[in-house]
Image 1 (cartoon, rainbow, N blue to C red):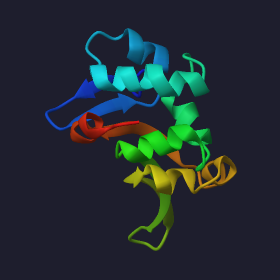
Image 2: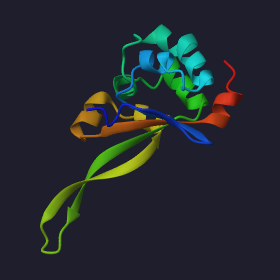
Image 3: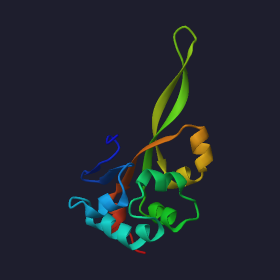
Length: 136
């Protein structure tokens, strides 16, 4: 299941598949150096290097220092939420709708509620300009 395990960037943003671990980010030569420094300085002091972004984001508490860091750098999470759609003949069908949530929206929902609502995380997005402006 490597479709959610990647590190990419464009001119404006960094994109991380949620199956990527902090260790993989730190060891990847092409990963954005400012985010690697932030991970070294803050994230891996709170969680193990082998923690996936998915696990960390899924269970992150709103008052945690990592949530505050992710807020400050303007991180967003792409996820899929099941929704019910009515077909032509009135039959209900469950489809997954992609949405992009701010960290505040994500941490406001408990892990139990995320599981109940069948929310599936797929990508962490971080704007480069916010990383450049970040000061601890």
